[in-house]
Every structure is written in structure tokens, then in C-alpha cells.
Length: 343
Ligand SMILES: C[S@@+](CC[C@H](N)C(=O)[O-])C[C@H]1O[C@@H](n2cnc3c(N)ncnc32)[C@H](O)[C@@H]1O
Image: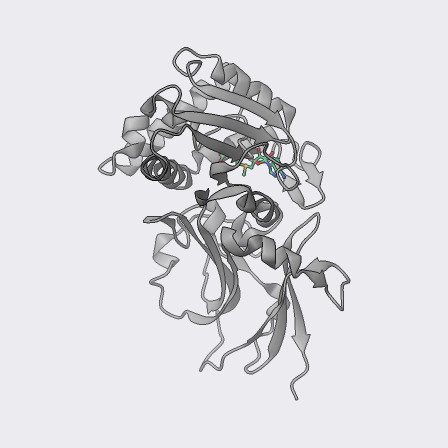
């Protein structure tokens, strides 16, 4: 299964089958059935820095196969890079928000010798950790040094410096889940030559024709590669946020209350709706791109977490109209848009 995922010649069908097999095996052993909307909210953990989705919904992420494949390949490449940077040293790895299957790391364990990796799997949901414990008890995996930790990754302090942090606690446009706060807390706990995965997340604001790729309530219908980056009729406005592990703690330090909402937010950017000949069919849209590790990347529409998000706050589109855009922190992180009076 792991070889199929790492083999760049594998077809989409083979990759999908491999992840499906992994997910089914984990469900059978760990007892958590993937379900995108299982008792949503009731079973989610509402933390002070964002929502930690419930174990069934977290399990469902494994099936977002391009996401899983690109992250697993990126983690594999990063561990091999760290073995070169820290020869002969067991690598201290923290996987924050591992969910019930530890999807982004568990399939790789057979690729490394016992003793090469010291692994901590952290999640806020005990049921996810119980599932992971069942998976870790399987022959082959038992040989590795792996422990589970129940904690909030936004506040957790690891007892020793880390070589690698893996964290995918996000939705599209960094909305709802605490990816930013987790990154700001954990990235400073790395060795200077350590690696944080993902290496970069960028959110841009554009005018774009989405057609039916996203419904009016922002529910994704069908990821449509044809409507992606090569689509004509896109009008880039600005990069409104770059989440880089190196700068996240500093960005958090600079957070201030929004003067209108009084909610804590990062330093705002100011954007202006560009002049176009015809606004018919155009929306203001946030696009998310992710550099997992080096060449392992997810572009627009590649995964659920890089689907576009409409911004109804910017409608009707008016040429020259200016907005203040701030990334709002707290229990439901999101971008906040406020019109700015033109001089
Ligand atoms: C989107 S799921 C991803 C699951 C798995 N890592 C994967 O990639 O398939 C996010 C996971 O992170 C956990 N999580 C989110 N925020 C967390 C936090 N602040 N502390 C600990 N766990 C968190 C959730 O409980 C959930 O299991």
C-alpha cells in the first residue's frame, strides 16, 4: 500500500484504492468509521483557537486522496532530508492532530528502521487516540517508538526540541480549524534545521467565475480541475495571507483587536476591487495553495482543503471599492472583510 502511494507512476485509481484499503483496515482495527458529517458540532471540540473536528470526520479526510498522497509523499521526503541533516540521531517527530488513523505518517513506518524515529501522536479527541493505540499494537508497527498524547496542540509544549512537526488541522481558506494557532505554537519548538509540514499556506483573493464548482452556500459540489488555475476570467486581487511556520509566532504576537468586531486578528491588508469590463458571472473568491514540502504541493481544486471559498461580503462587486481584510483568531478563525471609505 505504501509503495503504491509513494510511486509517482501510480494512477489516480490505484492511489484511491490504496487509500481506501488503508482507511478500511484502520476502521476495522480502530473502530472509527469515516463520516464527513457525523454528529457534526456535537462531537467536535470547540477549542479557544478553532474547531477540532470529530474522529469520524477526521477519518474521512484520509479519502481526500490527493491531499493524503501529497502529504504522505512530502512527509517521506522530509524525513529522508532530516536523516541527512541529523545523521545518526533519532528524529523527534510530533504529529499534531493525528486523527484516528494517523494517515500522514502511519503508512510510512515500514520504510524506516526501529530506533530511527521517536514519534509523538497528539490529538484532542481521546477516541482518536484509542483508535491509534489499536493500530500501533499491530505487528511491525510495535517495533517503533511511538506514544500518544491527549492535548491541545495550540498550547502543548514538547519536552525536547523537535526535528519534524506534521500538522493538517485546516479547512479551505484557513477557516474554522486552528492551523494557524497550532503552527504559531509548535514551529518555534523545532530545531533551526527542523521541518514543519506544511511549509507554506497561501490564501489569495481573486475575482473568478466559479460556475457550478461551488454551490451558493459554499458547499463543494464537484472539484473541477478545468475551473482551476488555468481558467480564463480570473482577476487576481491580492495575497491576503501567507502562513509560514517561521513567521507565525511573530504574526500572533502582533495580533490586535479588530476595531469594529473587537475580535483578535492578525495585521490586516487592504484590497481594492479591480475594474473589469463585465462583472457578470464573477465572484470574489478565496483560493488556497499549500506547499507541503518542497515540490509536494496542492493547488486550487486539488483537495477539499484547497477548494475555493466565495466571499459574499464583497458583493455587489464595485470597481475601486476598498476593503480591510483581517484574519480573525479565536474559536472560529476566518477572514473578516470590512468596507473602507474612499477618500
Ligand atoms: C482535519 S483532521 C486531520 C486528521 C489527520 N491528520 C489526517 O490528515 O487525515 C484534524 C485533526 O486534528 C485534530 N485537532 C484539531 N485541532 C487540534 C488541537 N488544537 N489540538 C489537538 N488536536 C487537534 C482534530 O481532532 C482532528 O483529529
